[in-house]
Length: 555
Image 1 (cartoon, one colour):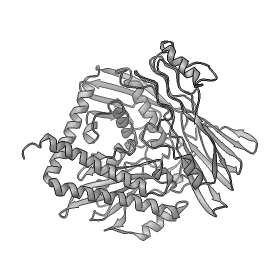
Image 2 (cartoon, rainbow, N blue to C red):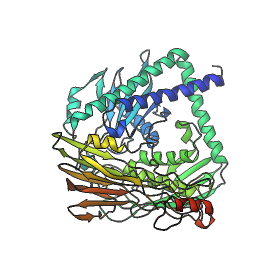
Image 3 (tube, one colour):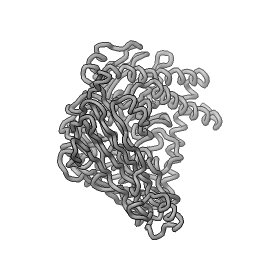
Image 4 (cartoon, rainbow, N blue to C red):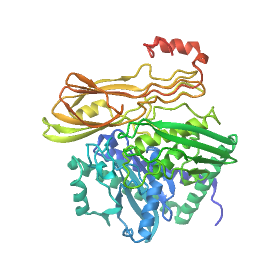
C-alpha cells in the first residue's frame, strides 16, 4: 500500500478526535447527575480491537482515564479469549467497574461497545462515568475507613448490560438493588450507552468516506508519529538519574504518611520510572491499582509535553517498574476508593518534582493535588426523597518559569470542575454560605503558586452523613527551586455549636450532621517556583493591593 498523504492523515487524525469529542459532549448533555452533566467527570475513547491500545481519546475527558481505559479494554479482550466473558456481537455493551481489571475506583463505571464492519470486529469504544453512588458503607462510595473493597460498593466484572441493543433487565435490577437513589441512575446509564452509539455512527461515516484499509493505515501512522514525537521531546532532556518523593497524608485507617519513592532515569530518547522503595500496601483505601499508577505517570508526562498527540504511541518511550509489592500495585481485596482521585495525583507530583530537576523551564511546582472528594447523603423531607450529593473542588496550580500558578484550577488528573453552586442548591437541601478564593494559600516564590478555594455548605433540612477522601492536609504542595509550599488542605465540620477537625485531617466518613450544621473546606494552594526574594516587586505590590495575602501582607 502506498504511503498515506499528509493531508489525508491530518484530516483522519482530526476526525478520530472529533468522534471522541462528540461522545464526550453527548454523554455530558444527556446525563442526569451533576457530577457528569456539570462537572464533566467522564471520558470517551477508541481502542484497538486486538490489544485494547488507545487510538484516540476526547479532549473533554479526564486524562487519568487515558491509561486505565486502554488497560481495561485489554483485560476485557483477554477474558473473552479465555472464555470467561461472552464474545461480542453487534449492539452489545459491556459494563465493568472492577478496579483490578484495568480500573480506578468502583464509582468509575466503564461501558465498552464493539464496532463491527461487515461482520468483523473493527475496534472498541469505551467510556467511563463517575456514578454518584455505587453502594458500600457510605453514600457516595468514598469510604475513608474501608479495609476491603467490598466495603466500598458493588464490584462488577465485565458483563453485557446491553445485548444486541436491548438492556438486560436482570443485570440492571441487580445493579439498581445495590446502589442508593437508584431511580436517578437510569438517566446516566442511557446517556453513557447513547454516547457510544453516537461514536459508532460517526466512525461509520469515516469508514464510508475513507474505507477500512485507509483508516487502519492512518491509525498505525498516527501512533508511530506520536511515539517519534515523544522520543524527540525526551531526547532534548539531559541524560541522568532524577529522584523525588511525595507523601499521602494517611490511608484513612492508620494515621501515618505513605511514601512514594521515584527514581527517573533519562537515557537517550527514553524515560524509565522506578517506584521501588515506596510504602507497602496499606490497610485503608489509599491503595492504587497498577493501571491507575501507570496512567498517573502518563498524564504527568503529558502535562510536561502537552503538544504530543495522545494515543498509545505517546507512551511507548516510557517504562515503569518497581510498583509491585507496594501500595501502588493494589491487589484484591485492598480498598481503592482514593486511588484515582488522590493517589494518582501524588504520583504525578513525584514525577513533576523529579523532572523539574532536568527541565526546569518546562515543569511547574506542585499543584493542589487533591480532588476534594466530599459526599453528602441523606433524605430531603421537602422532596420526600433520598439524595447523594458529590462535590469536587479545584485548587492552586504551582508556579512555573514564566508566571504565577492558576487559581482554582481543576485537579491534576482531569478537566472535571466544581459544579455551579446554584445547581447544587437546586438539586440538594444545602446552601453555600461561602465560595471564595482562599487568600494566602499560594506558596511564595519568584512565581507564586495559585490559590485554592474556601467554601462552607450548610444543611438546610433533615439529617445527612458526610464523608471525605481528600489529601494534602498534612503536607502542603511542595515548592521547587527555592519556592515555598502551598497551604495544606483544611476540613472543618461545624456541628451543634462545636467545630470538629477529622483525626486524619481530610479523611473521614459517615459524620452525622443536622439542619444548620456546616461543612467548611479550604483547598490547597500551589507551590512556589524559585526564591521569593527574586519576585518582581511590582507583582508583590499587586498581590498586596488585591488582598491576596492579608495575614502576611506580602506575596
